[in-house]
Length: 152
Image (tube, rainbow, N blue to C red):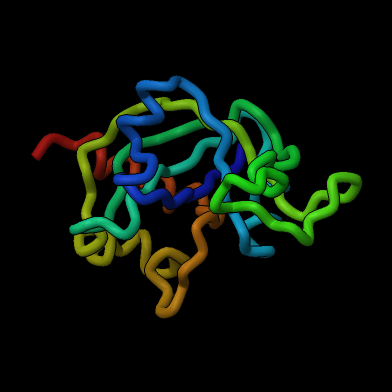
């Protein structure tokens, strides 16, 4: 099993939304490196659901991959903000995976994540990193889940 971190703006689609709908395609990824990470995901992998562009940003829950990479239909929809007129339906440029909720965590703000020694090398905390999808090590994932499961 591999572990991932997936960012979403909570006012667009937050963890509560995922719990409500039960499963959803992770659409709108328009960065090649993030897309390649989506393509590496396998059913059963787990992801930290991170609320970005929030005050404060941080971890909200755990999701699992329930559907592997397939073409993101929003790239072909002219009404979508993720429409890509250069993407060819016979050779799609962008993919999505389908995710489902696993467990809501105690919200862990970014400032708290920065204090965790187990995350010292985590890509999320790297200066200038803006990727919306990234891998986590087993230790990074375990540390985040432990922190989010602990009573405060």
